[in-house]
Image 1 (cartoon, helix red, strand yellow):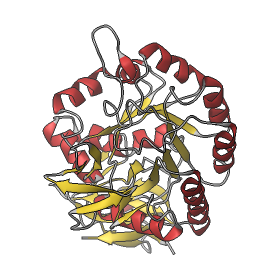
Image 2: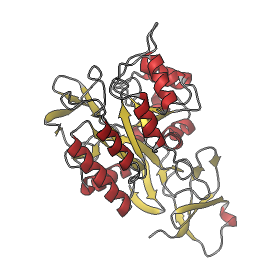
Image 3: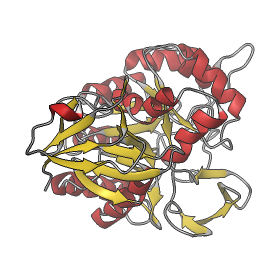
Image 4: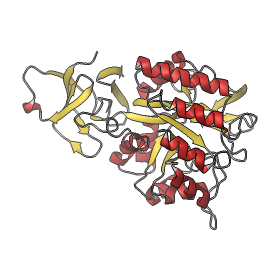
Length: 386
C-alpha cells in the first residue's frame, strides 16, 4: 500500500520543465506537489531519491514479452504479470502486452488475461496491443502468413467488446485487410487504431486517418517507404498531424539518420514516441526462443528468424532513451518525453500518466547521471531499486 512521503535529493523533470532543489511529494499513489525542502511539513516522511534525477515513468505501447515469456505462447494472467515485472528495472511503469498475429482462440485468451490483469490491478499493466492478424501479406515481417486474414464481422464485434473490459485497447491493422467503416466503428468504441504492416499509399493512409486511425506502428518498419513519387505509409505518418507513431530506437530497425530526419520533420500535434517491440529476452540471458513454432535467434543486439528477418527487438526503454539522447543528439527532455508524455497522449492517458504533476499517478523513475535506472515507483510503491 502506498503512503505519503517526499522524494528528495534529485533534480525533478516533471515532463515539461526541470525543478532544482525541490522535493516530489507523493500521497497514496498520486503526485501531490513539487515543493522546496523548506516548505515540506515537519512530520512528512522524506525519502532520498537515490539518483541524480526523477522523471515520469516510461510507457511502452508495444511489448511482446519479457522475463522469458511471450504473450503469444502463454496468453494468461501469469504471463502478463511476468512481462510487466521484467520491464520495471528498465524504467517502464506502464505497458501494453502485445499479441502478434495468432488464432482467434489465442486472441480471445489474451483478452481474457487482460481482463483479469485489469481486475487484479497488476503493477505496470496498461492494457493490450493486438498487432494483427488483419495485416498485409506483402509487409508481414515476422508475422505468420498463414494466420493473416481480413477482418470480418465477428472480429469487429470481439474487438469492440474487448474495448469495454481492458483499460486501453490498441490494435494494429492494415488498410489491405480492414475497411474504413470498420476503423470508424473501432474508434467509436474506444479502440486505438494503428496502421502498420501495410504497403498502402499516402492517400489511402490519410483516408484511414480521417476515419479514426490515430497511430502508426513501428515507423519505417514493415510499411511502404517514403519515396520520391509515393510517400507511402512512412510519409503519411510524418506528414499527417493527427497520427502518432511508435519508433524502435535501437539503431538496427531504423538508421539513426533516418530517425533524426523523421523526428525533425514530424508534423504535430501527433508525436513520435519510443517503443521497444521487446520479446521474451528482456531481463534474461536467453539466446533463442520460439514464436508461432519458429525459432528466433538473439544475436549482436538483434532478434531474427533463421532467414535474417527482424523479429521484434532486443531493446528496453532506458536504452532507447539513451540512444535518442546520446546517439541522435536530442535534448534529454525530449528523449524523456518520447518515453512518457508522448505515448500517454497517443493512447488518451495524458490526464493520468506521462507527467509529474498534481493528481497524476505516482509512476516515477530515478536515473543516475549516466542514465542508468536507480529506482522505480509505480503508483507510489517502489517496485525496483538497483
